[in-house]
Length: 112
Image (cartoon, rainbow, N blue to C red; front, side):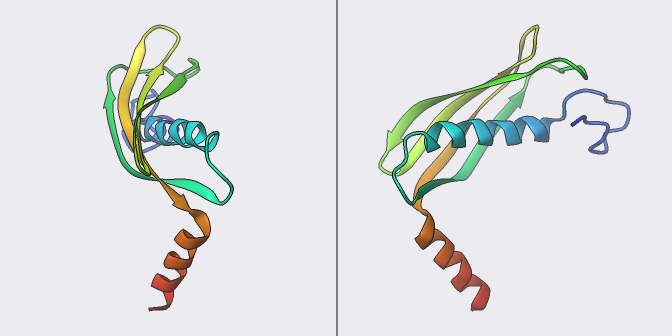
């Protein structure tokens, strides 16, 4: 999960794309706890400021807070902290969808 492994030679610290993925996962999990049957969310936007390096072996904690609900649109504030300091902050926008209808649209797109 290091920047070195992602191609940034010599940087043995947590890679930004990993934090990005963790931000989406934290927001998705928080949203999922409040959805009805057949509903899911899709991510439409992520912003991320990588503020400090997290060395290999240091634990990182990500928190998501639901900031705004506007119809089907959900906006989350996110933070990542290592054992010493805040290492990243950002936002994730997600939309609530009917999973069946969403997958039907994707399937139609594949056949047209």
